[in-house]
Image (cartoon, rainbow, N blue to C red; front, top):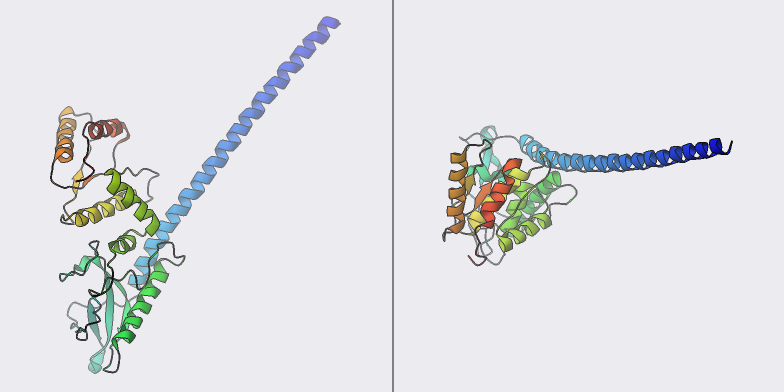
Length: 300
């Protein structure tokens, strides 16, 4: 009997230990599931924010009547010492009454300066204004434009996460006002100003920036916009970004060619902006070794 009791105690102990192990496994699985749910929720939130931002921008443009190229151009009031607004303005025909309103567009320029050559691809329609009469002052016209721009910002960023301002973000004055290129970058990328400023600060100090994350959250677009901004900032052409493609196959010739290209760019004394997009997972070590073999100058 004593032997049987001991055997049963041992069996019960084994069962209890096994139950404890199962409980630990269940707790670990529960924590893993909760973590994955949280990450999935975060990714969905990021995706919804990006889609909502782009959708609001697209819908705001689609909701505004489009003008034909044959519409006559409305000349802005003559410039005064207080400066002038730099956006392009056109009139809209209305039967025999002629021009009764002007289209107001914002030109996104990463250089942060007013350019004489306005690129139509960089223009964003924000609305229409009635043609100002002779009694309208510059201050009143400025206020109308700022109100229109503020309404547009509210449509694309209702929660004010981007950090844009209806007056401070406008670079339409050449006299007595600071010109902020980061605002154009915010408007183009639809990422918060604080995030972009941190990325730019890190990139300018370390000369390298790696963006990683889930698919479809805007990494490629953000990288290209940052590269375009830097190319303009250092005096290069906006299209002067060197786009390096890393081959996915195992061809030695292709890898050697890319390695020589990267080393040549990194060792060059001429300023350049290098963009490497969609690096295959099995090529990350290769890219890291190439960059590690070349010491970048932090003052160039």
